[in-house]
Image 1: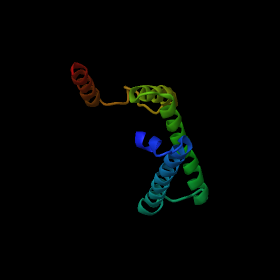
Image 2: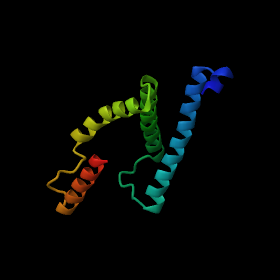
Image 3: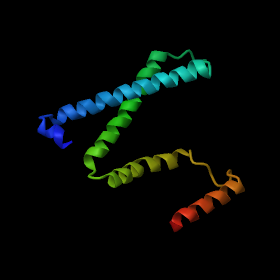
Image 4: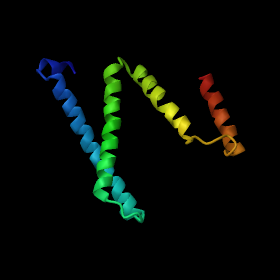
Amino acid sequence: MDRTWVAGVSVAEIIISQVVTQFFILLVQIILMLVFVLWVFQVYNRSAGNIPLLMVLALLQGMTGMSFGLVISAICGDENTALQVSIATFYPVLVLSGKPPLLVSVGTLLIFFGTLFCVIIMRM
């Protein structure tokens, strides 16, 4: 990074290069997702949805997530703080959405191995 500052690269150029690079990676991921959903798995589009609109919405959602990550990396000084901030923002949404399974619905064998794994990790 020091070499880029010495070469005269501005902050705006670095941010633009990050956004453009991440945009093209996101575009490839969305195209691959649509290829697999529509042609490999042959998911039928019953609602007669608009595929270009789906691509635009997926691009906007991806750009929002990447922009949020860029803001977190700009605010935080090191990687550990960035991880803590990102977990603090996403984990409450995950828990409140009802996505994690309840322990009642998880099998006893899986609970046993999960507890065993946690004990092993805690002793390290």
